[in-house]
Image (cartoon, rainbow, N blue to C red; front, side):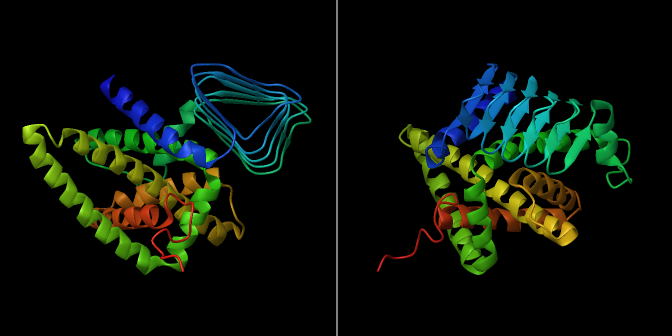
Length: 303
């Protein structure tokens, strides 16, 4: 219960901090969402609720549990994690349809212009472990389960952020490509300063003065870590899509591909640790340099 509460507060803090940067969103927890025929939403995201769309959603529909019933139009992707997705005959999805661990029902006449990814609950785990990549001795599966839980949490966060902030992810990832070394340099300096501030505030916490500052730094570090990591998912996934399919993939598909690729590399002993350390530097550098993907170089002096 404690872990779920921490995850929820972290997610709400992230959304509350960055949401003003974007447009009209509909984010609900255990509540139903209804988009009428003459109504338009930017994104619809629901945790445990039922989503019914007869109108138009400009970008993405993302559901964790619950149901998605679509008879209108979606401009990008429809993603359900453990959800029942029903596409009526009049439904139009201009991007991808992804159903992981749920049920997908498609009526004749519905239009899906992108790809369809459908893994039932009974197929999800075998698909992930297919090929023996994740084979371990008998005592190691416990660690693997923890890794899998971590991947699932990252998947939830990545899908939410990709649905709400696709432009910010695109801009931030592009800056890693064109300004890699400045981004890395910014990341090193930021990590050193952040570590120093954490130590100072921890010492001040002994006399209670530093506790509020310490809590604020921890919260800020979590937000930077989450957003920056999803930027890297997007970067790796987009590059993978262009390499294998010679085309740009949607933000949702990019973060899923990137998450899988980065998770596989992190499983490799020693190399995985070094890879994670390097990624942490890039995470801090790109978030601070681009101010959460809202500008090319926040640190540049104005003329």
